[in-house]
Amino acid sequence: MAQRYGESSSLLGADPDLAALVKAVINNEARYVAQFPYCGAFQPPPESGLATSRNEWAENVIVNPPVDPKIVFECKYEIDSLCGFLKLSRAYYAATGDSSFINTHWKTAVDQIFRVIREQSQPSFDENFNFISYFNWTGSRGSLSPRVNNRGNNEPKAYTGLVGTSHRPSDDLTVFAFLTPANAMLSVELGHLADVLDQVGDLKNVSTQAREWSARIKDAIWKTTVQENIFAYETNGFGGRYVMDDANVPSLLSLPYLGFLEKDDETYVATRKLLLSARNPYYAAGKNISGVGGPHITPWHPWPMSLVSSIYGTDDDTEILNALYMIANNTNGLGLIHESQSIYNGSDYTRSWFAWANSYFAEVVLDLAERKPHLILKENKAYRPGQWM
Image 1: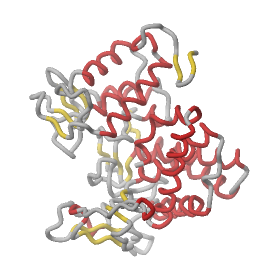
Image 2: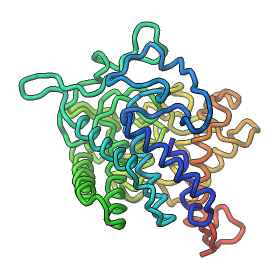
Image 3: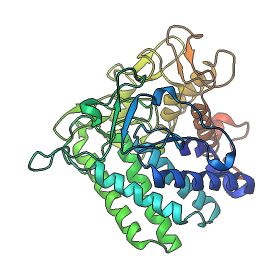
Image 4: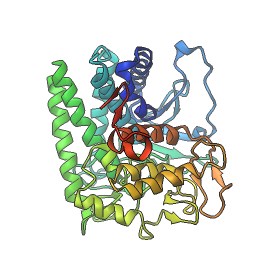
């Protein structure tokens, strides 16, 4: 949920009401993460007065440790859910200078995040072949959600320094546990967490721990996921590699957006070239749209979200304009961005109004207004919310 507020971060300093809303989101997420750090979707808070919702996709699913369905909407474990909470916290602090969100719930939530990191970075077997399991998610017979392999424990993994996950940002199952872009985002956000705590002058031991894990994960990404100058999307520590990308952020295509590397990094440039070609099994190109999709829909339904990520990954005006053109001209007249779009039929799409993609697009428009104003503004003058530059 926290990732949906990315476009608002540059507006917080100038809009007290928006800042108050984002702070409330941080406080609410802190309570949830503190209780159920492996979960990423929750029921409305009691203070809202809203009734809880039935989630048929979570029915007949066994989660261990158990969760409370009155609080948890769904408990698919995704690293990026935890990263989103950290990102929103540091973005709020950077924009407002207000550190009052660092309360008991928030501190407990951060402790729980480190608990997950420690648990999910361990190998599947110890040296005596005792199986190590801290979380499992099993879809039983009749459940709509597909079951996680190996009785809910996911594919085996060896120790590499990376953190394992059972689900991708798309809610789909991982093939191999170590999801490279999710670990990249985690490394970045742990570094920012340390910076915030150092500036506030609080939790020095947590700051030190965050820097250590940030460096360890970053080092492991470069050492274990790159071959022939190409990042793998997923690995398992045993030599298994899955070279592909999924449109959902964090993705390999979005590594510059995440802050993991610069867009001119030679490994990223080589990987990007592969991802935006037929060498990526989830890249598809048609007459009106081309881009990266994923198994959540079909291989022939690229997601416009991937076009936004591609804009963040280049300074080439032609590439940026081409991506903007495809985004703007594939809304089927609605004027809002879909979740996915068929390369064969402009009226064949999913989720006519996909909030995540629309907010992500708003974020890149603000980026271009500052980075490439001549492409989108009448006057070639850089703009940042609240000021011309």
